Length: 583
Ligand SMILES: *[C@@H]1O[C@H](CO)[C@@H](O)[C@H](O)[C@H]1NC(C)=O
Ligand SMILES: *[C@@H]1O[C@H](CO)[C@@H](O)[C@H](O)[C@H]1NC(C)=O
Ligand SMILES: *[C@@H]1O[C@H](CO)[C@@H](O)[C@H](O)[C@H]1NC(C)=O
Image (tube, rainbow, N blue to C red; front, side, top):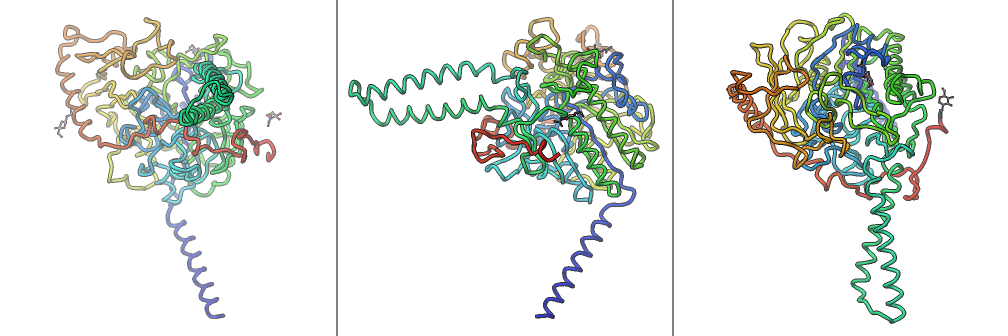
């Protein structure tokens, strides 16, 4: 007996020893830290370092001054869900099934079954395997559950993050009382009316039936009852939208349902600061994914009413304050020289965002046309700043095409990890460009998708300064002549929402960054030759795509009550607040 116990003890010691050495061997002292900051819907024209004169973003400007400013940094998609999927995997969203065939290109509900597939490899997963401490703080928007409410198959902790604090769905007007609604308001009225009609009919039928005035079969009565109940459930969903979809989690636990906007940016910042503080002597990856500056807009007391651009400006300035706090804490722990900081937005500003009182709630895309949900430059040309003192150039501006998919190979390589060999990675290592070792981007072509539809192609030939961009279709702005799709709140990708072009609409962004004047065979002698090469590139690219399950099919985005997370046991009052009590 004693002998067995001793053996056990030795075994445990050995195990412990092995774990300890494994961890120590796994990462090298030279392994850099990564702080990746993504803002939601921020326009390239909102930042001082990109030319804004009235919005105050001193901390972000400091990043630009001490690092590289990318002036042609391209989001892989003009919408949140697909752009973030591409960012985390280094692959076009069509490769992972994160690009919709239908109108709705993002997840709207927390209890949908679609999400980033388990087979996809995120940079977080690779770094975690290497011994990095990894955290996501803020917005996820890449799914939650598959089949049951606790399988968490799409949850950040299933995709390589050790720690998660934030929102699994997205910030929306519907999450904040009094801020109006993106889509619920439109149908609430109809739902309520329909419910009234159904219930009155049902009650009348029951009365008629049981008083013997009119006999209906039990079958049809049952059918009627069931549809009423289903309809009631749907109605409850729409009226409790905020509770069911806008909640904060810490790891697997729902901690605030519905989420409170009070000091929210401060809370996210504090979480990020603490995470860095816990990892001062081990390499870490922090993905700080702001809920700002997507609507519903909010700002804490210190920032409300302080900017020159209403609540939107207040929100941008508070986000900038938060970036400053992160830079301060890196400095405090003497981690600047060991940390690569990246700053970007998931897509261009949402130009159609105007509040019910007429206040502009969308950002500014500078000289660029259109915005979020379009592949005009305004929708995809986003801020791209990389800061790493002593390693990447300080104060450099790089005009070459780069992509938010490039972060994947860049940081994986910096961590000394080989790239996955069993799949196509569309991103390219940025380091040679950032260090001035090469002057040309490795992206000769970039493919611009509107959901799952190939919308446009960018071609930067190796031997010329031109940046050709050919559109196969363009969104129909409404009202005509405006800069967006104001009648439908966002632009859509097919049907009567777009105009197809044959031959494609061709621009040279190096001469016409505003995409004002399409070229013609008369104004561009190589017109057909250019389109030929682009078509070849499309053929090559299309051949490299494999069929995958569509994560944004109707079946995968609709609300599934059995997947609904609720922090209290009584379903109709999903409500709790562990945040205020604890802190
Ligand atoms: C700065 O940003 C604000 C808010 O988006 C915008 O209204 C304004 O036009 C921008 N100003 C400049 C000079 O770019
Ligand atoms: C928000 O922050 C302010 C100022 O720091 C503080 O007075 C207030 O109590 C905070 N509110 C919550 C709910 O924490
Ligand atoms: C397409 O692929 C072929 C075969 O690999 C290659 O020779 C050609 O250069 C490619 N064309 C473009 C435009 O990428």
